[in-house]
Amino acid sequence: MRSSFGIAACVLLPTLLCCCDSNQRYMTRERLNRGLVIILPGIEGEGPLNYDIRRGLLASGVYRGLPIHSWGRPVPIAGPLLNQMDIIGNRLAAAHIADIVASYQKDYPGRPVHLIGHSGGGGIAVFAAEALPEGVSVDGLILLSPSISSAYDLTKAMAHCRNGILNIFTRSDVGLLVIGTTLAGNVDGIRGPAAGALGFDRPGPRSPPEKINAYQRLYQLELTKITDEGLAGAHGYSTRWTFIARYIVPWLLSPSWPPKDAPGVAEAIELQAKALAQATR
Image 1 (cartoon, rainbow, N blue to C red):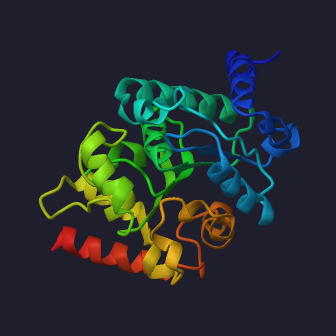
Image 2: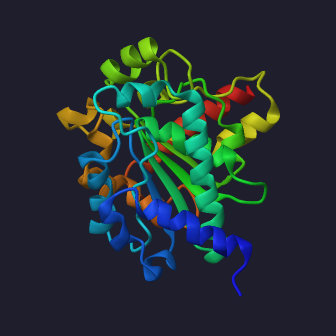
Image 3: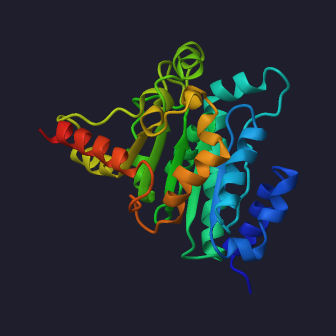
């Protein structure tokens, strides 16, 4: 007899399947038995950028559940702006994703689970990790040009991430993640530059010890430092399937972070070491 959590999964997972027509083929029992990667779109919802993320995973042989989970309001024209500013709705959407993760892990214990969020979806991924029940964790969050304030405290989210959080940012993303988020606010409601433009602020020497310890598992990669392509400053560059296959998949497939000898890892570790030295001096 299935447990109550198993019954819940039967309710929640089909809901996730309905997020886009193409999800069903990527949510077979065989795939789910290998793990789950939930792709969270930006404020624009399901579209080419999300499909490109999944294309990169598929091209690299990531044989896991790969649903695209739309989280905002499908309102024409005004929808993206509403999604960006709907602080309460964003938290509720994240709590639903947390329920999906918890139910999945009851049915498929021990399988790897990751959340990949682009732009506003990066903020939703952080909120979802915060909303996970006590004792439930994902393997890691991968944030692609996230629209969440650079000063946002990741301590609570990090407590539910076994390996940590990977943040991909670029200082050239000024139009959307500096000017746009200063005018309209990030998905957490704070007006100002996003972590997708400047990276997350590191804790200082006066920060609580638990925050300093938590941020030792924050890895950040600046796009323009790891690639010399002219488009590295574009908001959607981090979703390109070639970028996903080369730079993101090694993190997904590694049982522990940081993955060894993966492209860009040396730069991420260097940034982490400098930040840790600053926080503890």
